[in-house]
Amino acid sequence: RLAFPELSTERRQEFVKITKKMAEDGRVAIRHVRRVAMEQLKKHAHDSGITEDQEKQAEKDLQKLTDQYIAKIDQHLAHKEKEIMTV
Image 1: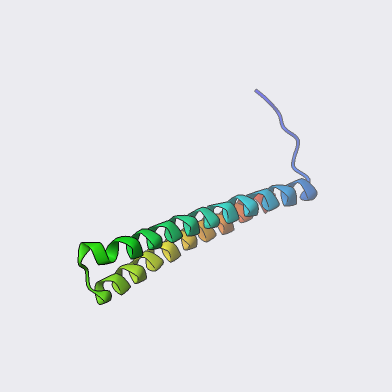
Image 2: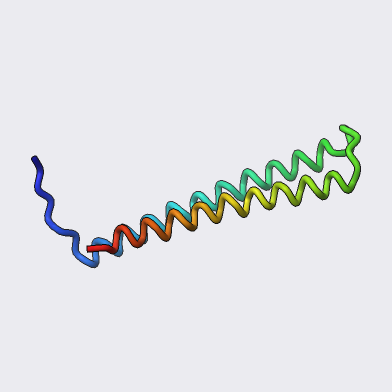
């Protein structure tokens, strides 16, 4: 069995900083996927014969999905920060 010493406040703050960086990387990745999907949607919208209203609705749905997943990242980040800072 391994015994680890308690983390200092400074070390906990370092972990929180790392966690925030990871969350931001996740947000950036989600936004990148959204950007690629929007480009594909615009590129193929006219070829596939969907209406402008359908295209706008698809863009709104994509943004809604993006917002949902970014909110999940934010929730996990808040939970993890609290967990890390709890002594």
